[in-house]
Image 1 (cartoon, one colour):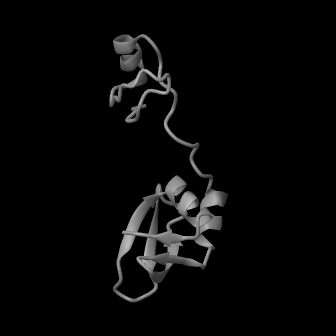
Image 2: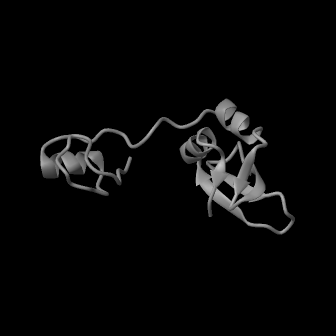
Length: 100
């Protein structure tokens, strides 16, 4: 597993090394990145939400079976942008206004 964030132990260093490499370099281990992965049921629930926008246009969330969500405008030919599932959950909780 790779880590690409600031050390959770507060050493102030950022790393893209493995946890083992960070421990070797800095003397302590890293904590896993971010929240746990969304379950399929969580992703399906997010896909069922109708009140979201992408750049101010009505949109929908798709791709519950995938690793990333796609947020696409309802306008035919409009953009579809990929987001990580934890990001989708956070944006929906804060009003559902996605920006590309």
